[in-house]
Image (cartoon, rainbow, N blue to C red; front, side, top):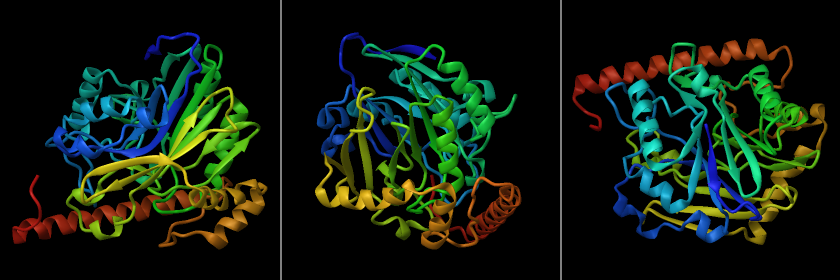
Length: 370
């Protein structure tokens, strides 16, 4: 998927990277929303579209995320021109929901990567000219967080597979100046990246990726500059009104409305502009501001452990992790095979519980209607 996002070839271009977003509202909800490109001065914005469009193919999950057709208006207001679809919610309404979403993106003139009707489409990169630079965007999601992997004849997302990602980078670096890898990984609400994913990020940089942007934990994680190239492990939420969706855990999402915005220039990767996004569920408002000194201090605390060696960081993670609940520590070693088996079994157990609760809900005639 090739194109041009900025037609000024001599422009010193900037890209704003934002976190998870969805737009389940009518267009009238845009009144109190700051614009990414207007506030940051970036040429375009890139984010993780964490939703589908409602269809009859709804999957049984604890929470199904969707956007309305006003999504196109929202993205235009924000200057979002490239989206990652490799996540654990883009298939919440099945193949039909994904088809409707892809059609909406096409009509809105928004480029996408990371999901499709088959594996070939899901792994197709976005290659665009921004200013005088050729950019490639590729995105992948960790299957162990209920991301539905695409197959040769099955709709889904590009799986977070090391060999698959390395092949893509090797091919893309021959014809692009910058390669951005968008990764949907880690555990929700965890403040530090998994040791395995930190190792993977370094491998991708070694292979030729120039910037790596992470999503999924719904909270901000640290940043590091590895060999002069930027890795941001989780940007948190950008515009993700989780309390607006009917699900049994709405209360736990209160306060999860903060995100990190990065204004990135390829010429100065070690000095990005940092902004914060704050969503107000009471007004459906979004406020974007330059990062405060307090925020930058907290971000440095999250980032400092990333300077450790692999073994030191793995020890640090075990001692300082936030989430437990039978979630194993993935280190990137051989033992991860057994840990993966356990995570799949745990996920299947959760799905059984969800189906059971759905049956009970139908029998008592309760629950929200779509």
